[in-house]
Length: 133
Length: 122
Image (tube, rainbow over all chains, first blue to last red):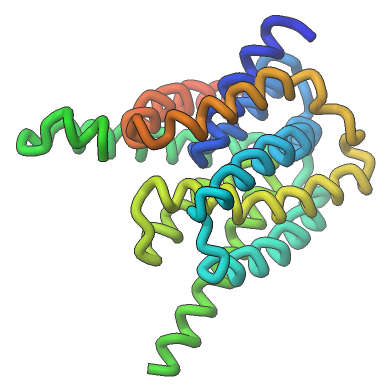
């Protein structure tokens, strides 16, 4: 295990446990710095996410912060969607999925920056709100 | 109204399917759909983040199984990233109530644009 792997894991875990799209950190690291094909990077990230998410969900469940009744249908849809997506992935191939992923995170990144700037521009909301929420 | 309730159920299931599709094909990114969906259902931001992880756990587990089954990855491929990952996850669950995901998302947004452009140019 290298220091780079440790740091890539650390940042991914930190963001993933907060539902902040930490997964994309590891996918990007693997594709951009380790030259993984896109699908292998995605699959590795899914494997990585399971124990991380399990720990987070156990902690949140103990604290009674998960509303299972509200999410059960979303999970059911999600299971169907992931089977469809993975079944279709060979037809797109690594190249197209990589570009689509690049575009996807670009758009989301721009959205996040705009949201954050908007938040700071709201003068009446002082830094207290930003840090406490 | 009963029809409203059915409509709500269909939206949940449909957007859940979109979450699973994106998360399955990209191997990440499901949270980007699940979090806004959960906030629309009336959860506050952090609650939505926590519940999104609970949505993505079973979905990702099935996705990962399919990736292993299709021989794209082997089960231990992520092992070297786990020591850092688990440390980060525990730290994340502890600090989530003390800091704003919004602030983090802004910082992370810059990183995403940079990385996204690099992927597109590759």
